[in-house]
Image (cartoon, rainbow, N blue to C red):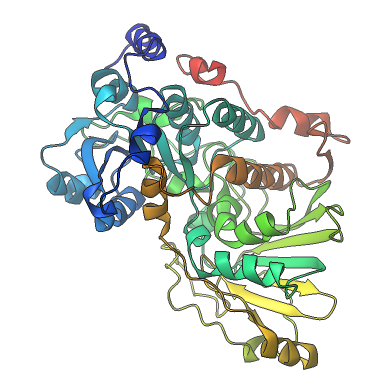
Length: 473
């Protein structure tokens, strides 16, 4: 196991130039002329089971990676077997800090699919040591972490960054941009986003008064490293294998999980930035430990760049379907290609995850991820459909986009300067959700104006001993 002493020594060595310099790969890539399939990015993977397995296969499908190292705290778990068999010659680690220490000079990029609370230290280490980084959504767990990440990304402009909201490289991204530029999407004053499938925590008791009891650890699992910077929790399966999404001090609930696939293009192309008001309008099963069984959160955004104020309302939970406009079901836009949520422990809602955009004359409907928008067929909508501009096709999927950007051939579509602010919106929503409150926020000072306790939650609890250095990079 890497000690803090040797870890800090390795960081100092990297800063002195013993690891790859941040700009080396971009500069070298600019000179490459061959087909992209022959240009392979040397990559290390952190988190190789479950979602990690999925993104590793997606990267493999590009034919553009040379896998140097695999890292997972639970290497002996059955969820890791497939990837270990794919890359038997890759170096193996349980602690990403040890991986950087022992073979950091052998890879130029990292892709990580780990719990939300472990995103921050991995991202900060990659930025500090000049490693291009693909991190799954949401970017981080606290507003302050997002500030630190965006600041570090600005200080390391040659490091390629990408958050894994894949819709940013699919049809909806290019359609939204094209329709806005053509004046089809304009004067949006309200947006509804909804995710009404069952969640892992729907089976928990909202009246619980203490955490789940300790259980035996899986064989050879590095639980201490898995916990990363958050406070100590005894092992229990209700924290592991994706169940961490359920808990306020570990995950980001339904909002952080699916918001990145539902708010993404709305937030970027409507230039929403940060809200001035965040309010928990409804909660069923509110408690101190895990997310409500269902909730409605209102985000209010001010007028900006000639666009009117916009209210964005989030609905989650089986009993909390959003109001639907007339002719909603008449609009095109089936979403058969949307990945299943993977957590349907109860009856599935007829209404799949999606969004509704309201303007003065038109109403748009869309499903999740990259599914394109359709226009609700009222009188104005039918007329607008006659004048729709052609939408360009995506030149690369989200994984190719990251790798091509590592080679200097493209720019990522969800870099941290874009995805960081989106992540902060989720963090503000979770604070309102947790406090069961209406909060007023000043986007200029980045402080709440009516709740000092909420201000303390912008940074959250101090990191666990041994993890402080990531917050000082």
